[in-house]
Image (cartoon, rainbow, N blue to C red):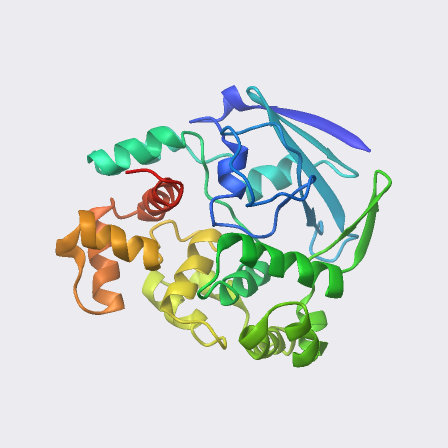
Length: 302
C-alpha cells in the first residue's frame, strides 16, 4: 500500500473535499461509512472517501481512498494516487482567479463564502453519462444509490486493505446487461436508456469524450445522440466530466434561481436561456458559479 499527503495550503483557493464530492456533481465517490449524501458534515470533514481508477485505461483497476484532515488531503492506494486526485478533483484550478471573474452579486458572494474550497469534479465520461441519465426526477442520494448498485452488480471486484470494492461497470458490461436486470438494481424506466447508450459506446457508434474537441454548443448537441440525454443531462456531462466550465445545466434548482434572482435571463428556450444565464454568471467559469449556487440553495441557503 502507498500513502501520501497533499498540502491543501499549496492549492490555490484550498479544498473542501466533502462539498466537492457530495454536492450533486458526482455519484462515483462513496464514503467508507456508507452514508454518502445522507448527512451533512462540517465542510471538508474527516470522512474517508473512495473511488476506483484504471491507470492507462487498460491497466489493473485500483482503489483510491482519500480524506481531509485540517489542511491536508491524505490518500491511500496501491498506486501513486496524487496525479489521479489532482485530475479527478481539479486540484490545480485556481479558485481565487475563478471567483475574481464571476459577478460580485450577493447570492454568489454568499454561496462562494459558504462552500469555500469546493471544486468541480472531472469524472470519467461513461460514469458521468450514466449517472445523469439516472438523475431525472431523483434525489441526489437515490442517484448515488443507483450507481453503487451498478458497481456491485456489474463492476469488477477489487481487493484493497482487506476489503472488497467494485469498479464502475465498463460499457460492455452495461451493454450486455438485460433491461430486466438493470431494472432490478433500481434504474426503473431508465434501464433501456442506460443499456442503449452503453451499447452505443461499446459498439463504437458514439463516445461521450468525442465532444471534448467541439465548440461548447456543438458538444452539447453531440451528447444528445445518447438515449435519455437531453440538453440538461448533456450540460451536466460537459461540466462535470469533459471540462466545459462554462456549462450551466438548467435543472429545477437553477431554473428557480433564474426566476428569483436573474429573471431577465429567462428567454423561453433552453438554448437562449442558457446563453443568457452563462453571461450573467460570468461566462468562462459560469459552471463553477452555478455549482456553488446549486449546493448553497439545496442546503438551505437564502
